[in-house]
Image (tube, rainbow, N blue to C red; front, side, top):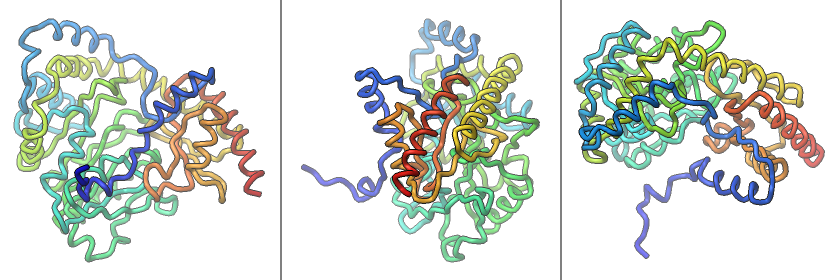
Length: 394
């Protein structure tokens, strides 16, 4: 059998890869499975997006290759939304890149900037597309552990100077998956200044910019002075509009950076299905009528999740953004062992912190993606499993 490339052999197992099959096996045995694993809510997309997809799917011109340009109306809708939401102006043709979901754009970007000997600074725990792109581009990941002592922020002052000098990319994601941390503006100002001084590309994953609560309004990185010189920002329709399977997002940056990603993509895909882009236009244009109610649903689920898991014996903070709780485990209980036992014995899917990298050990993530009643039942089961493990550890 032909040998795998070294870069392939170094890839870790993707944390969600085995969950669907394990769920099927449990369901076949009659187990009532409650899935709080993936950030994939059981909610409907905007009606206008569904209607737009149906119309566009019957239009012959929409069936053809979109190529990199894609549907110009989608680019224009993105530019208009960035203006309304953040007060920022971007050229729809030269500064916006339509994506088949933000994940592929984040991973593909590394091919334009990372090479052997170059470093990509990766928050850990973090989205696996960061390290996947860097490693497939033959770069060297430098994993920075996000821990409570830094409020789950990447502190560049703690990274060795020689590593910073070799760094080409810094991945940041706030509001953060999986920790639900948010980044203060003064922190973002310091990071942008350091990236400019060190000539590091700041890859800002803003997929959760609209899932925020209690008056918090997440910024765009481009609201920070100087960010246009060194940053690219990624957005997605997945979480905001309950369109995870549609795979529709975009990147925004100055022309030199945007065109680098577009050039890589020209060799890897021929564009998102234009009917999906037409639905994306409808979703963005229905923001005011759809998103506030959707966010209210997530806020109710967040409150239910916090109450239920606290009542079950866990400690958890009240997140101001995202669809996640990042919950610490007692010393001596590993996240993988807890998640495995919880699934096998109680039929509840959660994500072990170690699945997001070694820096996530000691925690597990739950997604508030189902009803408050189901979340409460999952919390009760989790509490019983944790109690049994504590006895075993003791």
